[in-house]
Every structure is written in C-alpha cells, then in structure tokens.
Length: 280
Ligand code: NAD
Image (cartoon, rainbow, N blue to C red; front, side, top):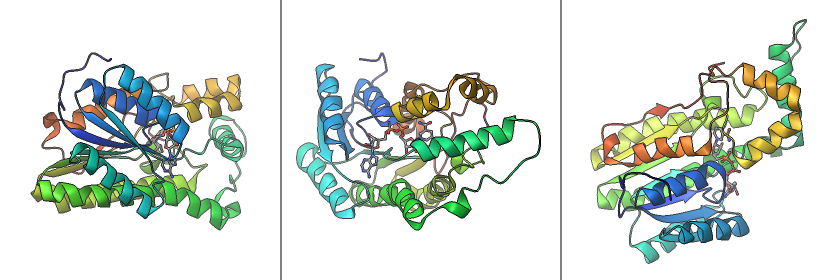
C-alpha cells in the first residue's frame, strides 16, 4: 500500500469509474489514506479484479456494477453503499470516456498536425461531421453521469451536514486542448460550471464540491491511443507539454486525497488543474 498519512481514516468513499485509470489510482490512494471504498463501474470484470487487488492490500472494499448514465442504476448503487457501510462521506466522479478510439485518434492527429506542422491550415471538420448519437452519447456519460451521482450523494450528505465531492473535469474544459472532441470539451466545461454552482449551494451544509482538471494522464485508454498515434507524433505531442511528460494517475490521486481531507476544508468550487503546464 502507498505510504500516505491516514487523512481520511474511517471515511466512506464512493469512486465512480473506480475499476481503471485515474479512478483506480484514487481508490488506491484513498485506501492508503484509511477510507472504506465503494467502487462503481459498468465493467464488472475490471471491477472484480480491482477490488481483489485492493482487498489483498488490506483495504475495505465493496463494488457495485453501475452504469452512471442510468439514474436508477446510480440510485441502487448508493442504496447498496448505505446498506453496507452506513453512509457516504466522499464522492469522486471519475467515470468517463476519453475519446481514444480509432476516430478519436484520427481527429487528435489532425489537431496535432494543425498545431505543429508549418504551412496553410484547414478546419478539422469534426463538429460539422458529428452525429447526434456521438454528441449525446459522450454527454450522457461525461456530464449526465456526473449529475446523477452528485444528486444521490447530496441526499445523504445534506442529512449528514458534511461531505466531500470531487468531480473529474479536464484541461479540455478550460482550454482548446481537445479541439478534436467538441462534445467532450463541452461536457468537461459543464462540469466546471456545475461544480462552482453546486459548491455555493451546499457549502452552508458543510459539503465541499471541487473539481480536478487534468491534462494528459497515462490511463490505459490514453496510453493505447498514444500508441496508435505512433512514435513521431507522440514526440511532437510531448513538445507542447512544458513538464516534458504525461502525468501518472497517482499524481491525480494525491490531489483527490487533499481535496477529500480536512486540509481542504476551505476549498469551495475550485478547479485544480494538474496539466504539466499545457494551457493551449
Ligand atoms: P479509464 O477508461 O481508465 O477509466 C474510466 C472508467 O470509467 C472505466 O473503468 C470505465 O469502465 C468507467 N466507465 C465508463 N463509462 C461508464 C459508465 N457509463 N458507467 C460506469 N462506469 C463507466 O479512463 P481515465 O483516463 O482514467 O478517465 C477517468 C476520468 O478522468 C474521466 O472522467 C476522464 O474524462 C478524466 N480525464 C482523463 C484524462 C486522461 O488523460 N486520461 C485527462 C483529463 C480527464
């Protein structure tokens, strides 16, 4: 287990998207910080494997196969957590889809080439070609899923008059870093707005709401996508990152632990952006 001070000892943390990447790294950090974990994910197999590893490392873990786009499934997930652990103290909304499939990589490459190749520029033609299905599908997971989980957690936290909510936005929601993904960008910008608005609403009840807006993080889908881009483009992508590297998921875990702990009791509606200096 990581060497982390037990800053959230005995707290109950729900982590959506907890079976992989950033969500899993946050789960590992929170376990080391002393929390009991409830992992939500739609991928049952990955969920079981993540939970087994965490239990082996000594964590208290339960899992729920939840599709965050289905509000009934989200409601059931939170009911299961209350049945098992009695309450919810912390929610991390990390479930999401980063666009690293074949089409996503094609559009990323077009964007990177537009930024880094000399000569005449052309429109990326992403938004004009986007289908309703692609647009709505992305918003459903990345935005609606965040809202459904936030809503259920608040019902419990408002009763408790305390709680910590951490939403996963992205540098994409702050700048044009993901100009190849307008739906993702819109969803993440909306998460920033939602975070600020709800943070004011519930601060008087002792509940803090903040978001993390990472740059490039080496989760499994990100690494797979970068591999598809090829070595030369990977090197060019690296050139636009002042830190000269991608972030490790654990680096996001450390920020989430801070925001979930008493150290962050005066952080209300903030956007913390570990982006390696990328601000395009
Ligand atoms: P990941 O694929 O490793 O993790 C996402 C998890 O969410 C997966 O386990 C997946 O099964 C789950 N998930 C997806 N849709 C779901 C649904 N409908 N219901 C329940 N679970 C669902 O990806 P990641 O890169 O770790 O991404 C985690 C979060 O971080 C996302 O919100 C993403 O937008 C955000 N983010 C990632 C990066 C990056 O570079 N990797 C950068 C900025 C923000």
